[in-house]
Picture 1 (cartoon, rainbow, N blue to C red):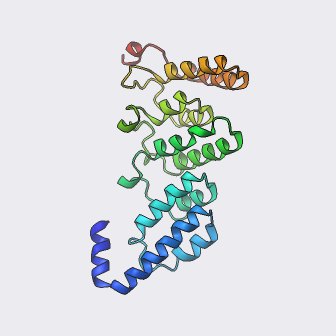
Picture 2: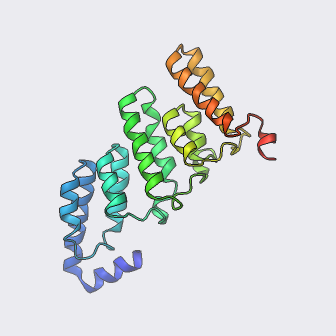
Picture 3: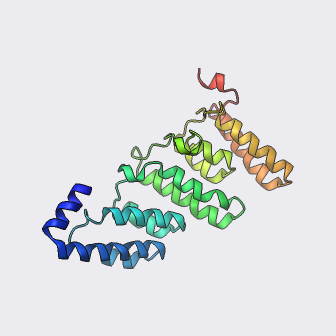
Length: 217
């Protein structure tokens, strides 16, 4: 992609400058969740390959703000290639930004719906069990369990996430979820505790275990 951009810049310097300005407008559309504005700009672009960096950055900006509509457009209309290296650890990226939403039911719902879009729009492209070494060597599912993001964990569970993945501390997803459930009880949060217990039961029905030694068998 860098080579394509460099060649285009050398061969079409003025048009390249115009595309860079257009790219910044695309990013702004993503920040503002302006689907119509994004669409009108991208369909008239002289070279969409050159704009890949801007669309990928815009995609992450939309994730930062939990803008479901623009994410939906980029995945299902624009067909953004999530297999590209720039989208590696995209599930962890979204879940990390959702940690603060444990107490915000409305926003957590948006984040969960975006996760569903990513998982369902690109089945087989996004690695559900990808391990991010920068976040404790865990999968997105383990991360969702650890932070008590039960809605997001449920989506990944239904998508086939490994219920017995082991992190670098020998914790399984069930073990991580158990810690969060205990915390919910200590914090006197009965509704959250109930949701986590319901998720626990669903995971156990799919073969989840607490003992990492059994998980590796």
